[in-house]
Length: 197
Image 1 (cartoon, helix red, strand yellow):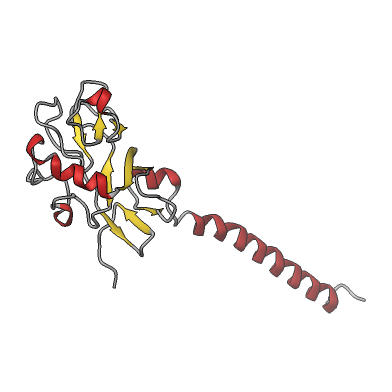
Image 2 (spheres, one colour; image 1 turned 45 degrees about the vertical axis):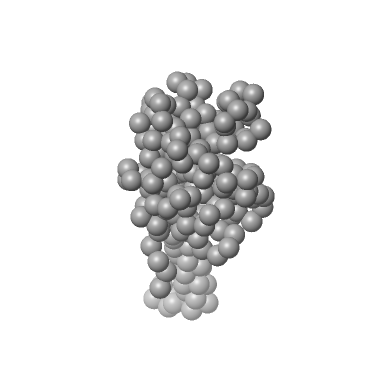
């Protein structure tokens, strides 16, 4: 074979090999790029909406998730807890939730979309400590008129099961209700309350 003749088999092999290597390189580059389009766990904590499965949240239980670097409580309130909220009306500073610490759709008696499920930021509005869950049975520690709620051990602020602050507490406002929506009976999204199409 002279210097000017072309080996067609060799040329075909080189074209196929180059195409395969180029394709692998393209996929190797595209996968991380496509992955970067989804929010990371850090980005979710920084503010991206967080989807939460509450299918296993039994009545009387609380589930804690992180949103924007803060603990968010999701509580499946029992009938007794809901009755305790009504009994606390005369003891709380803002019984009708007039201070804007919740979206408009949660400006109601229970400060929630559904009476049994409440979503609250678990951060005291006094100095940012995290209050503790105190059941209705904590009367020995909290007083005989205690109907259940939350107690901040840092400075003694008390909140009912709707997150409303008790009068005389150092905390000036109710616990905040973040934006949220239900996406089915057993899932909710914290940080997004836009209606679907």
